[in-house]
Image (cartoon, rainbow, N blue to C red; front, side, top):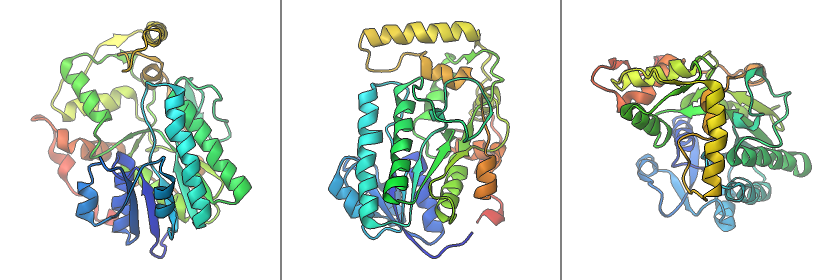
Length: 347
């Protein structure tokens, strides 16, 4: 679907999702305005010639400046992690979001796309769960609980204030320029400390950053999407073992084989996390409930609604996507496909 050039205000523009959203927006001929902190690495944004709004998610004036005159807002910013207090996550993911929503209402933007998470669903095995299943009121960890509350707030603004909000729920996000997830996984693989929880054949709800951004633009463009929520993944079956094994292969590392029995992993996650919280530990222990959710549970979610209402067809299959994502980390034994350009049809 084509659209006339828009002015898009992007939060989280120096992060993984926001950075890819900015890059795609510029390719499509849109004007981009990015919220950036004084301490952010803005070299890519400067290279692309992006307009910067200095401030952060709690700076109401900066948010007002960013939203003023914008047609669309892509809220790609969030405090992410598997450790921390609910108050910490709420402050940036819920309270600060209210400031951004207020700025969007005042600016009368045409569309507000809020990037949420598939983590808002109950912390259990999922087999094709779709958007008719409500988010869990009490999630396994503070991050996903704050994302549940953020979703509810954004949809409240849509219902009560007429703000045309669309919520997208991506799964586990990976892609080029990832500074956290893939580097941490590679560190554990190199150290030989990685272990599967159970067989490793459980589904991983992964989504390549460029596939997610494709979905974000569809959510912005679709006339009837306001007030709707969409699950987004790569749209194909990818197990934990397939994902992690491919990462190891592309990095020239041996595939991990260590396994912790699932029941033992769940027990250890509960005990170790409880002890860490009692001691007031500031960093996440090596095993906790959030990591059990990621590695132990079967996370298969339906994207049929996005396929039907948005015509969402992920442009990149997993094999190509993971090679592109790992190009900067490729080891001596890895295939050279990662650096190859995408098919011409993708531009």
